[in-house]
Length: 361
Image (cartoon, rainbow, N blue to C red; front, side):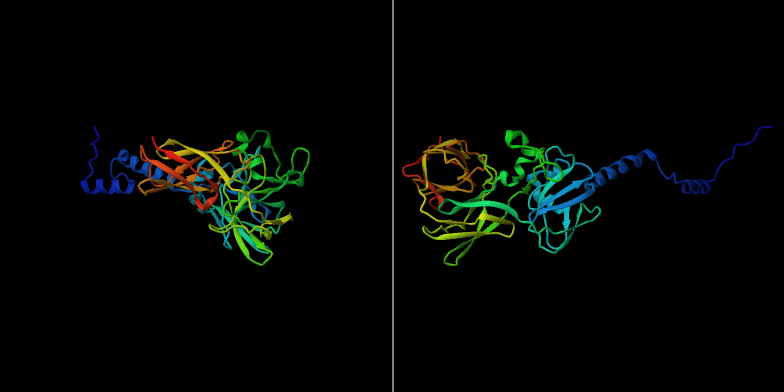
């Protein structure tokens, strides 16, 4: 005797589908699920955890992560975004991107705002586990101070004194610095056991220079000068329009450094001499000085190009572009007009440019 096939009524069929969860074509839901997962992966912050935070001095932390940071997480062009990944309390923040130490897997030199002595800080990375550390009250031991132009002075440090600029011990600059680069261990000792203090990025740093008459002036770091020309001698510049007064004795002080020789007596220094200017393209040109200044004195400088019709164009020195006596300047906001002859005028008289002109092609 044949068994009759059971036929479910529409009501029972509907209940069965609801109970089993099979209320539609399962293949139709897959693309949506994948899309949601992709979106979640894109927006979810890095899960990399901090293993150790070691304060090195008032402006530097050494941070070891559980794994290396990605290229995006150390990309200098994304600094504002990267800052948000480091959540400190007590008003602290990073001032430049982390830099992997030579020979390290995931240990980075991290410049931070000046640490307040006696303060305990907490830090988390992208919402991860919080780490606690006590502020360092160690100031970097600098050597001496020296005037280099009428509005700029330098502060040097020496490796023989056990002080090294971070540019010499990080992977990012290793290829370009040749024999200046070397490796230090987690305790910042070299292969011979010599101990070093580390100067991290001086971006946005300041020092105070006080005259023997009591006038205190805040001088700001000139970018890309802290480890240029095979020296550890960052430049600091007075506010625009301010000049050092010849014959006056000045003393430099700082909340992040000490100085063996903190004083210098200002003199009248002959400005650089501009020999010629030649267009590279409609957005840039090169300036040739009468001689190689031997140090990065063009950093932060600008010129004004004045056309015969009265129009003016501003241009800024391209950081680290100087090769000997030649440096590159980039036009700001505008372009050079073909056939127009421009007079070159250094802003704030940082150079003599008598008779120097630039004719755009």
